Each structure stands twice: as C-alpha cells, then as structure tokens.
Length: 149
Image (tube, rainbow, N blue to C red; front, side):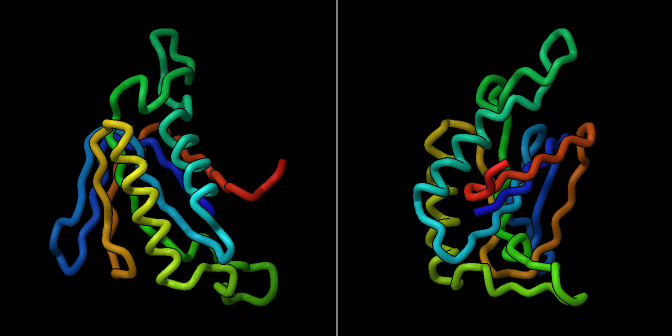
C-alpha cells in the first residue's frame, strides 16, 4: 500500500463539479492499494500518516504531527500510485489491487482515520476526481507499507 502525503494549507476534491470533500490546514493523502495488501498494511499507513512529524514547532523544526496539532486530513484513492514505469513509456497497473479489495481497504483506512478524532474528508472511490490544493512548504512524503530502505 502506498500513500503520497502532502502538507497543505487547503485541499478539496470534486466529482462532476460537486464538492465531495474539503479541508483546511492539514494533510492531503493519495492512497494506492496493491494486490496482496491487508488491514495490517492499512493500520501501518494510518499510524504513520497521523503521527508523521512534518509540521513545524515554535523553533521552526518539523517536530509536530497532525495529531499533535489537530489537523485535518483529506483521503483520496489513487490506483495510479501502483503504476510501474520501469519498462516502456506507458505505466503498467497490474500491481494494483482489484477494485473490490482496494475499495474495502480504502474504506478501512477512512474509518481508521476517523477514529483518531481528527476531521477527515474523502473523495469518491473509482471516480474521475478534480483535486485542488495549496501545498504548504512544499512538503511531500512518500509512504509504502512494503518498501524497505
């Protein structure tokens, strides 16, 4: 499971010109689910996301998390995060989970985020979405529940 986490001043998502979710200062999270991912992967990412120390403290150091500061989170499903571009010029998406499984894990992540008590908003699974954001920093972090560094 992969997540691209962006620190934002504002973010919103629309489907067919209808606002589906919006947040003020916080995190915009794009989430991709891979074949073989489980709730364990989701729990790992949710914990990482809410506890990432990517907000500045009084000394200007990135030392505070979304939980520390009661920030908002916008979760957007994005299967293209599973694209493999190592061969050719067109991404291969065979690593992405089947839609039924991906949606189940996406909803599981959404519920887990809501349990943190933070304000959580979301997009619409499998929809063509327009995402608008004002990036803060910019600060963008890539998380992968399987990747070892």
